[in-house]
Length: 313
Image 1 (tube, rainbow, N blue to C red):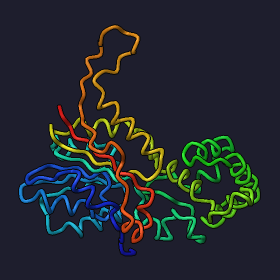
Image 2 (image 1 turned 90 degrees about the vertical axis):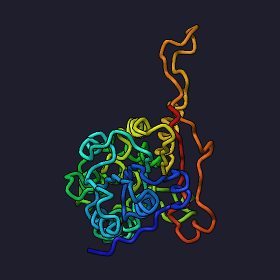
Image 3 (image 1 turned 135 degrees about the vertical axis):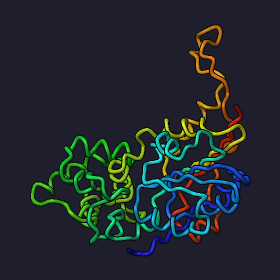
């Protein structure tokens, strides 16, 4: 196995924002290489505990190794963070002192050619699965979804203005032969975009993002997950969420806004009948972004946004 190398984005702002305390119980929804988890355990132990999830077997193996010095203080489950209800039940935990969710794809996944995440790896197979036991791959989507379905994925998940043209060309090419590599797909995307829109380098990023989101179901249930995990916090507990594109950030922003509301009744009603109370204080009125120094060292931090909220009920 290639070494699992990953630089956690905005590590200090995330950990500082959580206000980790000794003896606290924390949930890391995407353990990755264990970068954020290590800092949490360093601050909450002895006496504290970390429950973490990830779908990537390589990430779990790397995290177990990285966190070995805290053996007995953490449990990592192979699961989607959206299954937090089942995971916390298995861990026999009801309430949390903090939650961190990092929605980014790891450097290891992008750089490891066999994982097929990157348009920068032309010989890589079209895979893009976080969980390599899942039957749905990028190759399946590209070669079997209808033109209409492909257009919808590219437009909604990639915000790609040339989604219809790209989808049409994918269907045209696959009538002759299956599209099997990242390079083949990237070439089709490049050929689908007018020359005057190719001034800022490769054009495949948005489409690859869209297909990856579809393969892994990244946006499905995200709002309910952020809401539900926030409600598992003890009073004074904090949630920190790292997003890497506008679709994720918009969902997190909406979830926080709803949790911060005192009332969600129709404004035409003379009095409140919903009984909704303000549940959180949003700590980051505007999302935190990476410093210039971090962006210089780690280019993948450039599009990251960090939102933090504190439970007040």
